[in-house]
Amino acid sequence: MLTEHLLQLFLSIGIGAFIGLEREINGKVAGFRTMALICVGSAILTIISIQLGGSISKDRIAANILTGIGFIGAGVVFKDGLNVTGITTAATIWMTAALGMCIGCENYSLALEGMVVTLVVLFFFEKILNVLTRQKEHRSYVIHFKKENTSHEIYAKLNKLGVKCLKKFETKDENKIRLSINLFGNKEKMEAFNHYLLEADHVKSFDSFL
Image (cartoon, rainbow, N blue to C red; front, top):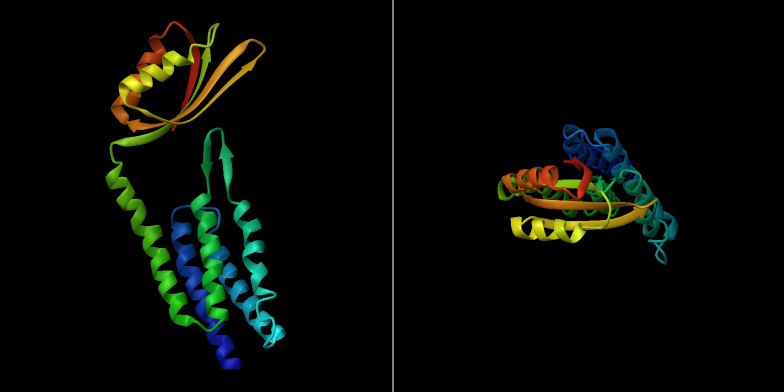
């Protein structure tokens, strides 16, 4: 029994560390040590759940692991204006906990296969996405109008350029009209849109964020 538990602990440390290494390399909040601890903790809680539950309710502790992991995942998601970051890291935390649970259930093959799939997604899917969207980028704009709301002209220009508007918010504060938009499109077209805003008479000012 002791040998089995040691195997589970070391395997969960290894799997968590491998996944966390990718997050660490990319400078993410939850990295090497965090992922290792999440995987080990999930494995231990699953083992305890099986032992305390006997043959009746083996899942009474394990069922709440992913709920608890949700709080940790929420802590790495940040909203900056129209941009949301940390969702991939949160999903990775959730996946690492699931792999720890596999180890706690002694399903080692599923844990190893899941680790391989997770690493493939983290390491290679980003490269594939970069190849597919090499000439495109996301940009957020906050546009202030001089007097009346002329956002329809902005939308018309974006449509003409072929730039996709992902999100848009229109607000008015003390007679100041502001349009916040999140765009995705070709870099050259983005620069053309920047030039349009600089020359537009109805635009008082604007801020652009990559």
